[in-house]
Image (cartoon, rainbow, N blue to C red; front, side, top):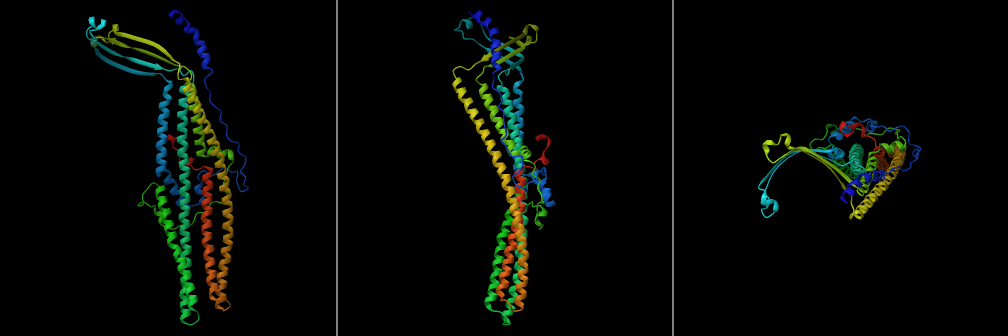
Length: 472
C-alpha cells in the first residue's frame, strides 16, 4: 500500500502545478475620474512652480524654508520611519531566496537503563558540523505578496515624509506671513496712535484757549486710548507666531534667526499662480500618493491572505560532518548529507483562513474607498483655495480704493474744521474710519498671502527640492 502511495506522488505534481496557475492575482487600481481643467477661470494650466516660496520675493522666507526642511523635528521623525520601512522591506525581500546556515552542534546523552536501548548502550556523544539550507518555492504568491506589501509600506513612508515636508513648508510660510502681517498692523496702529495723540494735544491747547470744549478733548483722548488698547493683543499675537516659527525650525526660544528680529515688508504672492492640470496634480500630491500606496499594501495583504489557503512546500538540504568522536570529524568517513521536502496543506482551519482572507479583502476595499475619498476631498480643497484667493484679492483691491477715499476724507474734514464749516467730531470720525479701513486692508493683504500659501499647499508641490538619495 505504501508503495502505491509513493508511486502516486509524481502523478500528483502536474495537478499541483495546474493548481498553482489558479493562485490569487493582483487587483487593478483605477483612479477616480477628474476633469481635464480646473473649474475657475483664474486657474492657469502652466505647471506649478516647485519652489513656490521663491515667488514671494522674500529672501528671509527662502532661508527659513531651507532651514526648516532640514532641521524640523516632524521631518526627522518621518525620516526615521522611512528608514525603518526601508530596513523592513530589505529584510522581507530575502524570503524568496534559500536560507543557508552554518550549523555546529555537540551533545551528550545517556538513555534510560530501563529501556531496551539503554540496557545495551552507554553514554553517547554526537558532534555535527555542516551547512543547512531551507527554501520555500513561492508557487502561490504568498511570499511575493508579503514582499510587495513591504515595498508598498516603504513607498507609503516615503510619501509620508514628502507630505510632512509639504505641510511644514506651508505652515512655516503661513506663520511668516502672519508675523509680517502683525508687524504691519502694529505699524498702522502706532502711526494712527501718534496722529491721534497729536490731535489730542492740539485739542487740549484749544480747550485752554477757549476754542474747544472738554467734550471734544474727551472724545479725542477716548479715540487715542482705544487705538492704543489694540496694540498689546497684536504684540501677543506676534510673539505667539514667532514662537511657532521657532518650533517649526526645530529650535528653542533662544535661537531666533536674526532676520526675524527686524521688521520687513509683508510678502505678497505673484499675480499668476501656475496650477497645472488635475492629472498632473494627482501624480504630484504626496498625501494622495501615500493613500494609493496604502491601498496597494492592503491589496497585497489580501492577496497573501488568500494564498494561505493553498499548500506550502518546503525543501531542505544538509551537507556536513557527523561523528561520535570530535577528533575524527573531518575524516571522509564522517561525511553526511540529507535532502527532503514537505507539503503543508491546511484542512481543519480552512474556514478560519477563508474568514481571514475575506476580512483582508474588506480592508483593501476600505483602503480603496478611502483613497477615492481623499482624491475628491483634495480636489475640492484646491477649488476652495483657488476661489478664496480670487475673492481675497478682490477684497484687497476694494479696500485699497476705500483707504484712498478715507485719507481724502480726513484731509477734507481737517480743512473744513479749520475753516469752521464742520465740527471737530467729524474730524475724529474721519480718522477712526481711516484707521478701520487701513487695518482691514493690512488684514486683507495678510489673508491674500495666506490664501496663496494654502493654494500652493493644496497643489502639493515643494517637496521635490529636498529629496536625497536615501529617499529615492
